Image (cartoon, rainbow, N blue to C red):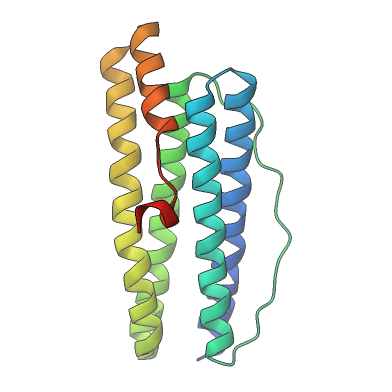
Length: 167
């Protein structure tokens, strides 16, 4: 694996763990706002991001490449309304998608077929991530400030199964 791709994957590992940190901060904010369903959904999202980071760590190790962990920045702490939280989440996922696309292009340019396969998994994962969050955003926009509808969405988000439960 070439050194540029190794560096880019190490950067992505940092980005995945920062994503977990961001979602954990969102979860804490939702808990403080008594939105326990949103909080639980965000906590599971944080766990999923950790698993993505670990997947890349394992990929690097299996390829004999060095894993160079980087510092995580401080995530925001105040997110506004449930709609604003989910819009921020969607924007974040879109930025992750952009990063993954760039990694895939680097792998293609380097002729690194194992990396292309690995990043294809992430590309598919990002399509799912964006679609799921966009659906929540659209529901929240549709319901506006209706408290009853917000409680319904909060309850549905609280019913999210873990990846292990889904298998």
